[in-house]
Image (tube, rainbow, N blue to C red; front, side, top):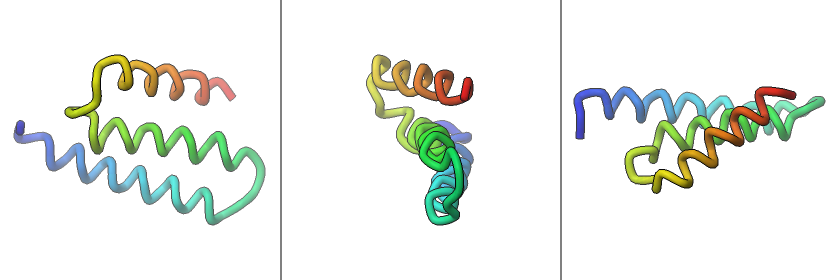
Length: 68
């Protein structure tokens, strides 16, 4: 565990909170925005333990969602 790992976890928790708030808020493009922040949260929270292929798939998902 590096010295930055707790900071990554805090950022991941913040992004997860943003994801939940977007889902509760409602409105247009809610699913795409919440999926974007949810994927970022997953990468920050469990990125150290994810297989490389899964992390790459999440990065591609983030790139596709950012295009909308």
